[in-house]
Length: 166
Image 1: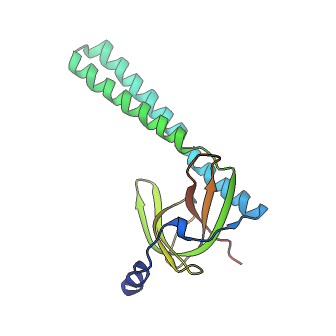
Image 2: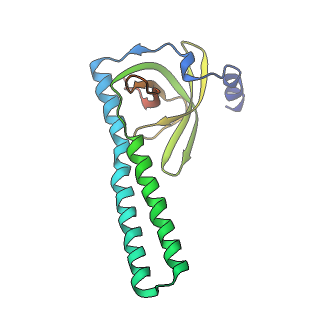
Image 3: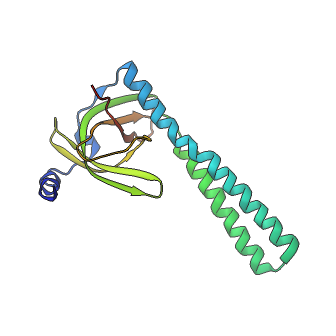
């Protein structure tokens, strides 16, 4: 297993090194559903902001010391930044292009899944692409490497989704 990963790393590249094909209608629907999963974090960030504002109000009314008010205000600023980040991250793609690959390494960080992918057709190893699905991810799982085009002048959004089992 480890030796396989080391073999793949010799061919390390970026998603730009892969030849993508245009997604079919069914694949486009799967990609749109996967992108909508990112929107689930927006209500959570809004609730966190409301809790921080409530905490700030509690500190102002009951404690009233400037240091504690500043700390609670810092929490509010951090929550506003988190909400803005999640809203900006939600920008949807207009069109999708797909390449096929398989999972090599899986990494989970704070409710996000990332996977390193081997694309057999182009012999390219791509480290750390975001996995947008609620399904479990295992090594050697067939995947679609998706390039979401967000419009003129915007960088493409690269992510992976599980390929349908045939």
